[in-house]
Length: 530
Image 1 (tube, rainbow, N blue to C red):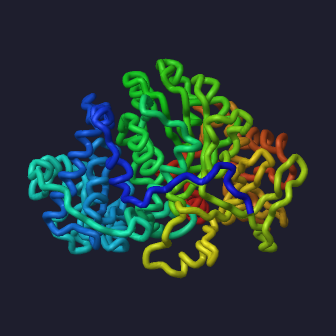
Image 2 (cartoon, rainbow, N blue to C red):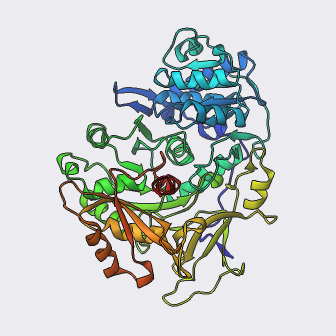
């Protein structure tokens, strides 16, 4: 078993609201918490807390309490913070919903989560209304933040000036949030995260991630995703930093906001790192205010990270996590230069982990050649581990063992420097003639080709029903890149069994809102074309 290199940190036994806002000083209350780049409007910490209290009071006046689940379908706008923390302040549970979801997908999540209220914005109202109607939710329980006929709106609710309610619950067991796992390897499941889970993970993250109160964070990764929820929203609020919100990613808008608002800290997913490393338009903007870029949500190859960092003169960092871990378990420490950016860094405090051989089930502890263990499935234990999956005891039992270790399904190695690298997912390994091939390794290599803008690799069956690697490639415009050129490039750099044996050029690689490659979509494409 491996233990965190850091001493345990104290985890207050309080609600998320008390943790973030309970100790707010007069000086901190005057600081800027949120900036809306569309209007340049600023919200102070004091104003945010008052809005959170008022929204909680308005909900409580309508019967919302500790037995209520509220759906939140909203992009990254300042009001998200008010509503999200207002729901928690009222003692209710919030299930955050992907802004890109169809009415049918929203309906499924609302129904599965048992939500009886829904908060959204007018651009998303058509699909929100259809979903609410499908589950029998009355329209007066669908709150439209920016206003819509027949619906409650945020301004009206805040103007009621209800006092925040007195609520009591056990932070260790009361479910604060119900995000749904991304579904990249199966059916989405409701992940039950307690107030203690969320408080613990922010406390843990503060050790490795050196976000400070004078930082300005560009919040482009969605708050509805656990990465954005914990590392952007909650960590930034705890550190009293300022958040510049972005409802959706657009590269020009992204760069413009950095330039106009002096953003210093960026939390991104790998596709943005690829753009920072390769897109010519980056040079047209002054983004010299950025000192740190932190990538998560999916593996980022070291070469792309190094190119991005060198190009914009910023420190590149990477971490690892999953919804079931609230989400961060590993992150590159801010004060260590000896850890390569291709890794996910060290364990956060208050955790232990194991590497388990997927063939034999034995625990891997010995270092091999080069001071690295052989690969194994990563198991993690700590106060950030979820309570379980909602209404799914079998899935919970399959993921959480009797000793409290969460089986991540990810393959990792441990380095003698105390840090870890993620090799791939158990379910995504390609087996070619008995050899295991990690798609992430081939994708990292392909992204190093100057004519390749993006890439994904999956296993497909050849004419002999043998699984082989196939690459989906987004070529640079007017590059003239050919399939033979791609395959020859890979063959030069890998062992024979890892060679890419089929290539298909596509306009874009399908990805989740958090940046994970949706390999299931690529597999479905293969089946449709078979």
